[in-house]
Amino acid sequence: AQSVTQLGSHVSVSEGALVLLRCNYSSSVPPYLFWYVQYPNQGLQLLLKYTTGATLVKGINGFEAEFKKSETSFHLTKPSAHMSDAAEYFCAVSANAGNNRKLIWGLGTSLAVNP
Amino acid sequence: NAGVTQTPKFRILKIGQSMTLQCTQDMNHNYMYWYRQDPGMGLKLIYYSVGAGITDKGEVPNGYNVSRSTTEDFPLRLELAAPSQTSVYFCASSYRTGGGYEQYFGPGTRLTVT
Image (tube, rainbow over all chains, first blue to last red; front, side, top):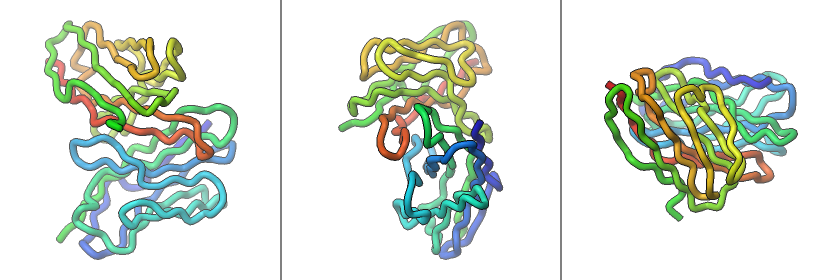
């Protein structure tokens, strides 16, 4: 079985500060890992994903995430927060095996960016 | 491509009424999903479909029904609406790539049952 834990339901940073959103997963098979962003009153859109290969993944809007198998983590970072980054962020995992067509979702982290 | 479209954007229902939430995708994706999103609860999978004529239950299917007669459309039916079904509903679609089943989302339908 797979699961996702996002540490911190709310994170607040100052504009220009480092953004770090934490995601830990459990999976009995190699995972595919995803970060999605949801802006207010909108649907979710893909920020970045890890499939295989390079463990540091770059996404849109300056975000990146590093897959660390030994720590079962896939934390999302951005060096310098912008006001437009205020949104809800979701981490998700699916199995890199078999025919698993579903994503397992974390509960989300709401990011606030203060001027 | 319009991607995934959902109608209506907003709806208020009275208890016991029924309605259909529409979802259409123009990306020729085989897989489609219905989620509900409640504050602080993340996304809960209601139903999903792996192709026309094939549907399966997710985590929270009670009170909902789906059908998939075409690749493009995946409507969600609410029978006998209850206040517990007040939520934001998202439809998503995906296809098999080398990197799993990345999902594409619609803009959502905000439903209130009173």
